[in-house]
Length: 163
Image: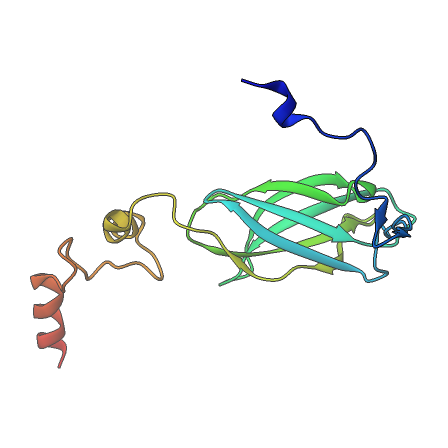
């Protein structure tokens, strides 16, 4: 290969355009002055949380809640100055929200920021959703569905007898 084909001048190519010298870009602000907490799905079992908050406090706690019933799912300690954290979720395919806050001297929870609601993707193939929900049972389960996607004969007969 001929090395002269790839020869580039040693001058700053971006320094001049149309005979004008470009000015350096101004420094970007690290914050926008808004207190906020944002949750984003990273994968089926993990959320990435970032926040912007003016606070003199350094130690805080992140609490992950199930959106459907506001039950605590997970908690983790963090430093406010870090401004982001990865948080494990116990179940894929669920909707969650996060609170950033502190415990007072009496161990009472004081949320400082609350995030958006985020829904994680399922961590298994779509064809397995009904059978996994059936095994889990409980509210929101597909207990009356067969693996073929229709109503099972037991659920049909119980519906007929109740009407």
